[in-house]
Length: 119
Image 1 (cartoon, rainbow, N blue to C red):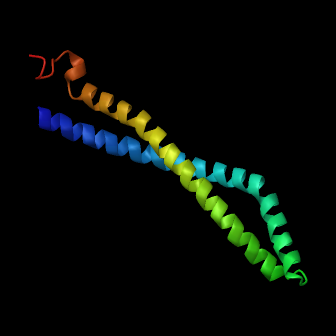
Image 2 (image 1 turned 90 degrees about the vertical axis):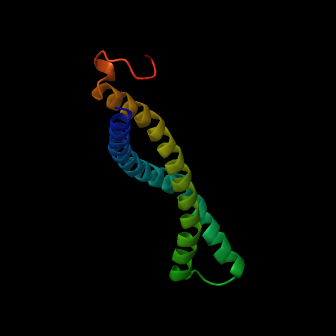
């Protein structure tokens, strides 16, 4: 009985967590990218132009584009990593409880049977 219940719990947890995390991470990435771009793009462009001015040369489109890519990539990487960690923690907390309750209920415990440790 206990082994069967454990297997059901593991199966439910795996199924529910995988779907929840995949969905939340996709939404999070889109949201974080939009936020990071709107928040940081102006600052990155200003920084790159300031760097170009300090070098004393003209504005080379390729150098400007490379500077923007360099500065923006770091910012996006940091924002996405932080957001993904937070969102996964949140999804795990929510879905783990739901999956365990569901597996226990389907295992017969919720249908009036007493678990072995209560007897």
